[in-house]
Image (spheres, rainbow, N blue to C red):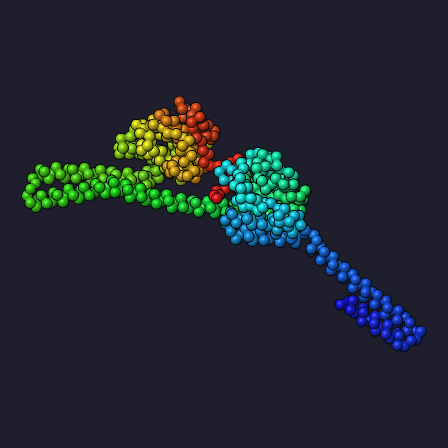
Length: 504
């Protein structure tokens, strides 16, 4: 607007001076010319600023506007899905978008892949520019650049990777002259790595690193959410399965136990009634039959009480863990003729909260039932004592034992449901579980539960029980181990390379 005003005023003054043609109007002509020149200079200045702005928007590859756009799109994309495959694909695509807009390379010169841990291997989940054969290659992340990036938890830029012990196996990276590796890590958990490669030198500079690191950070958060969601779904399905198994077991026990007994009582009562109506039975015979019916009824009552005890022992709530374990031993002797010995420190149950007592009892009950059903044990010993800041529950039998490695291998597929239940119950109370067994030499299971309740004043003088098995106990809260033993830290989910539960 100012340029137009200057032009109009300058033209008017110039024309006015020319038309009058007087000496006094010479100054008017000069003023008009000056205004026209000023308008011209302002017009040129405005044009130069517009051109500079256009060149800045087009020619500067990594300005804040583009970076903000990439991050914004990333956040929107990752916020819309809990599928880890879509998360990794979005991370690659946005990284490529930023690199291509920066004119780093053409489409054919860029390579990218996201590798996530599955069991102990890094597997390619999403890739751009790799061959189908390359997408099948796996790595362990224990050597070379991958190991270094995972260990220091920082991005690494490298040149040629042909001689790398793990990346060298990828045919698509043989001609790469710049490689960027960004670990996907949150806290102490390594989910995998994000890898970019280009066919030119020094392709990934400071600005590029900042943008790609931001994308990797957003992808890691999305992977965390996706992993939690998958774990929740798996846990929900597992709980439904466990509940269904419990219903089936209860139905089976009722059918094989009390239901059969009640049916037998009904049949005998009906037979006695028929014989009485037809005068085919003497009073003495009726009395004998009634004694048999009474015996069946008592046995059915005992079976139902045992089932109720298995579902939820009332003594556990009223008298505590030690009394519940002693009652379990008595019922095992009464119902299955299994000799169960209980060795417990006085008032040891006061060291644990009620919820922890209940779960520890169920673990010990599961172990006793396993010894009865599978180990062919004639004697089971249950121990409860304090060891430093842990309450220890031990179950030891003289049964046939089993192969620990076979059970552990089957554990991943949840084939050994009893072991799964014990481990997960221990984990829910931050406990440690140690299982030792050898074929022909019995089994010993120890559960260490951290003490979270301060003992009452009258119980503070409890001394730690001396035992001939002290060498095999869990010292200082750590899990004992042996050549043929397995130790599981049920409270800690941290591992050297923790990995999300992903499947291909």
